[in-house]
Image (tube, rainbow, N blue to C red):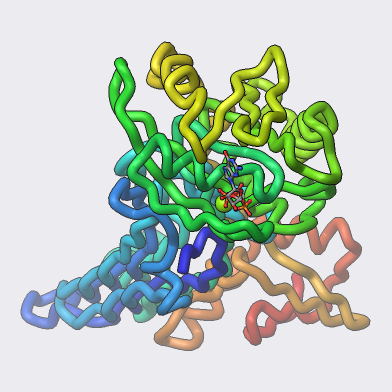
Length: 397
Ligand SMILES: Nc1nc2c(ncn2[C@@H]2O[C@H](COP(=O)(O)OP(=O)(O)OP(=O)(O)O)[C@@H](O)[C@H]2O)c(=O)[nH]1
Ligand SMILES: [Mg+2]
């Protein structure tokens, strides 16, 4: 089955914990606890050998490895292994409903789910303030993401028309495709590809399911069909003089309306209008008339297509990558004289282990330097109120 729209779960690796240890051989003990390894990250990479997401569908969720904890005596923990997920060219990536990347070129790597940072050991936590730390940092947590991938096939030419117009018959006539043909509407339910060679090189053609009124809002196979025009360079509107509901001009109006409504950029894609089924004695002047049944007009159509150097035509879709900079945000909940603060910024303040007295000192030092302290002041915190950071409580001064 052709899989061109999936949701997958991603989980990056957690950072390993730092360690607390001391070099006891020298006369003066010095901290030599090492750092935890970084957690593995998850990256997408485009691969032109893939044409859909069936390689990801069977599994559905993907995890990168955790970083290892540090050992004593300068032995850093190993980094967790990264995970690379292969995707086809033409993949749009959505996170929380927002488009965050369009990957169109070959071998593009996109870091999507960064592994947690490894915690520092007591050697790297040494400072003027604390020359002999008995504390270390725990590693950053794993990150969980739900991602939606949607494919828009990379093609030179797409066949668009109402059901039964003869799109699959046409792709079979001019390429090696064996797209299914039948007399009932929606014979084609997912796109199929074919290729032929013109004077400038190989031309890839995509046969799409039929379009009907309301397609841009999702009627029929609407959206999943129209999405595949995003990465094509040229459209043939295949028109059917034998359609009992719409005459040729009404078909053109319907197709143009749905296509432009779905994505206004589509108006810039070059179009050729071709009338099929000329064997039924229903030719329409001013159009190329063909019959996939008798092959009448096929040479003329192919000659027309041979004049086009598809390599010079531009796609309306552009590569795009949003770089994730995760904000160090926090949330404040106030219950009378108690202020509970949580979020990524708080995690970075409280990620400490070891001597409990030192842990609390370090937390209050970090808290005072942070913007959380200012924000609490703005909100009217008073001396003696309790601040709770991830369960570490102290009174505000
Ligand atoms: N008379 C005649 N019939 C044709 C011609 N081309 C296609 N057909 C017939 O029209 C019907 C639909 O053909 P398909 O190629 O499956 O049409 P389609 O546009 O791919 O249809 P969907 O996949 O349902 O959108 C079949 O019964 C074909 O045999 C033609 O040139 N002349
Ligand atoms: Mg078809």
